[in-house]
Amino acid sequence: MESHGRDEGKGPVLHIVVVGFHHKKGCQVEFSYPPLMPDEGHDSNLLPEEWKYLPFLALPDGAHNYQEDTVYFHLPPLSGDVKCVYGVSCYRQIEAKALKVRQADVTRETVQKSVCVLSRVPLYGLLQAKLQLITHAYFEEKDFSQISILKELYEHMNSSLGGSALDGSQVYLGLSPRDLILHFRHKVLILFKLILLEKKVLFYVSPVNRLVGALVTVLSLFPGMIEHGLVDSSHYRPKSSVSEDVSLQESVSGAEEFVSVSVTDLANVSSEPEGEETASPSSGNGTEGDGNRLKAPSRPSPESSESDWETLDPSVLEEGGPKDAAETGAELPEAFEPKPETPITVQPQAVSGQGGVTQGLVSGLEEDQYGLPLAIFTKGYLCLPYMALQQHHLLSDVTVRGFVAGATNILFRQQRHLSDAIIEVEEGRVQIQDPELRKILSLTTADLRFADYLVKHVTENRDDVFLDGTGWEGGDEWIRAQFTLYLHSLLSSALQEDNERLLADYGAPFIAAWKITHNYRVWLSNKHPAMTAITPGHPFQGQYISVFERGKKIGNAMMTTSRSMVQTGKIVGQSVGGALTSAKSAMSSWFSTLAQPAPVAPEKHSRSD
Image 1 (tube, one colour):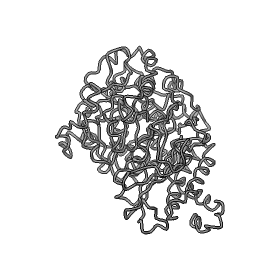
Image 2: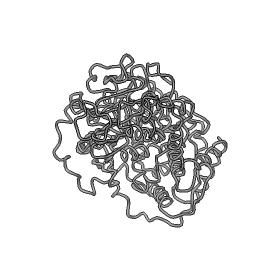
Image 3: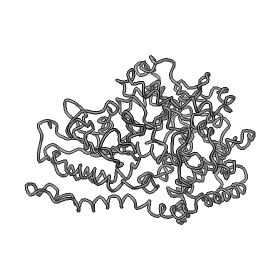
Image 4: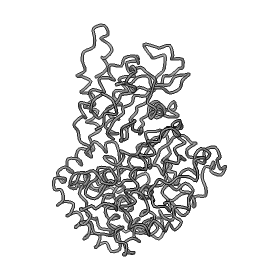
């Protein structure tokens, strides 16, 4: 992995950072190890220009309303690097009068600080489990000048995580598709399709831990996305450097000429938008009429990107439009009647590491034999689990073709014209203003059967059935396996251009809109050998017997491709439930092995265990 232009070694953790709130300066970095600026000290407030938003991401807006909170966030790569930096921050506040050592700049009744880990790998839940214990111990010292425990944390994390692979038990720790389906029910599939279309999707809820948990859990439904699909998801420019930094613009569009040449057979598809993309002024993946069709689309002019925020249409300040127009979930066809006798379909084997991964020739991502993860978060399509208010300009930035972002500030939700969909997590609502997009995302009968199948298995009290490779039926691993099957079948069906019946099961308008997206073109531009084993057709099309027979073939093909995954899946399925407890236990054990404190201050580490 890259060293980010520093000498801190090759471990997964780049920095441990403490961010505090100063009564005059606002949010600022108070400590970093190793120093964020190589030529500065550990206590320097200076930041690389690319990471200027770090203090506002680590110490979120409205944090004073909560005793503690957790934030997942993404930072752009530093100059010379190409991969996203993953941040996890644990926030706490303490009464100033409880401090043993009260520094001169503490003038308020409470002290608010966050301890952050900046990492090369997206181990959100695992890092959170370790960081929560350290943050608690750091605050228990009641003397924030005692930073030795933070340095120990840096060394411990790099030694314990240094050689570990990104397997499911680590990557998916703390992410529960089961809870997601219990909350959003059938609308989870709408969220899945929204992201496939590379739309501008904004999640909204407080506190931040609920926000980032819901957003990242949706992403975990895409095979390989968390492990390998987010490395290019945070290529954006801070506002002050928009006119100066042209290197990022080159990185956003550098490979697109190659892609557009490789997909010449899509010329006819891309030339018939049929109004899907042009119907919404904030659409993020419309195509240009020139030869470079994959260049990130933009707003009419650079000036509009700065004026959109100021020229707010008063109508969007309303809490919401008519229910029938704003809530996609209300469009579920009433004619659909769940069939209790629906047979259980095949249980696909877990395929997150099937056959290994290789570098994608076009996408640049590490892909499996099916060409997954899809190149969704590339070329200017951002994934920002939490957005600070200081980043609001990104919603209308001309270099940003779309985003999946999370926000807690109501100003983001009020700017409805800057997003295609607003996901109100608290109410479980999916609000879409554009009627054409609502039509595209309307679930078909086959889609509703699939969604109802998931909801039933999650909500009904069933005897625990443990399945090789997918954990227990209705559990998190099992749910992810169902979405893997859905996406495999969707990709295989999309190749059958002459079979309208197959495509209709996914929605003909949806298929037409998806085929002109960047991720589909990139996927189509390369060959994926394992796809020959996938039978086209929706998993819940027409006659259920055909679903079962086709499912058996898919399952057998998956098993023969990598029999070792069966045993691996068992281990993952058995261990994922207690992984969080194990992670915290490991950290507690580590506390007991810390070096003995110096004789002059024997009480400093007495609380560590």
